[in-house]
Amino acid sequence: MQATDVSHAVAAARSTASALGLTVDDAVVLQNSNKLTLRLLPCDTLARVAPLADQVLQFEVELAGLLAETGSPAAALEPRVPPHVYERDGFAVTFWTYHASVMPDIAPVEYARSLRRLHIGMRQIEIATPHFTDRVAEAERLLANRHLTPELADVDRELLRSMLKSLIRTIIDCAAAEQLLHGEPHPGNVLSTRFGPLFIDLETCCRGPVEFDLAHVPDAVIEHYPDVDQALLSACRALVLVMVAAWRWDAGDQFPNGRHWAGQLIRTLRQGPPWPSLDAMTRRLAGESRDQAGT
Image (cartoon, rainbow, N blue to C red; front, side, top):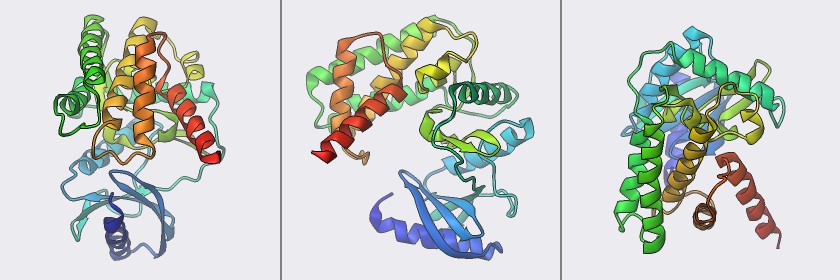
């Protein structure tokens, strides 16, 4: 969310919460991406705010309610207010239970067990969701339009486009069972709480093989997740890296140091397999960013 909109979004969340009977004296920005995530105090609730044009919040609210019925380890809605998407001053606002993080890292076995529970719960849910190939189509759109990715060299553009087509064909040819997925269950979307690991940010949910989800998680987690198709996992890891590379070349991308990440992803893809997980790439690139900041 643009900096100029943040104050208006915060005001919309605070006034909406107050109108619902929650006591709000302060709002702490926890994350600012395509949506704004706030911790409201002293009522201690989480608010997610997006422009009204963003229709994903309604999907998140519906999905969260369904996941709660299955006992899945996922973000829960704020029980003190009705489960709705609230509209105010051009923004859509939803309210969630706030959970404090109890430790910086989650043990791989606990991570894997919770992701497995989430997948089992998701199999019980009937809800209209995009296919994982619809997410690929977003990346294809960026690569097909030079106005959207003007800094991307033609040779790199062709590499990403050809890899997308080849990897999709490989994954579909595997004919693996498909189900509802989180879409991006990387460590940044898992909270370590006193109730155990909980998965947040449900807006990326899609349908596909579980290996698409596993492509986002640390290598150590894979060791504890049962019945992983390693060949399919490898293809999904490569696909995720290509997709993220395309997003980082987007002219409107606001990811910190995004162009550096885009270049490094291209270099990794040119090196070929074995493909690192998205988590491994994220840790490596974050380390490089810290090293650069210290020099």
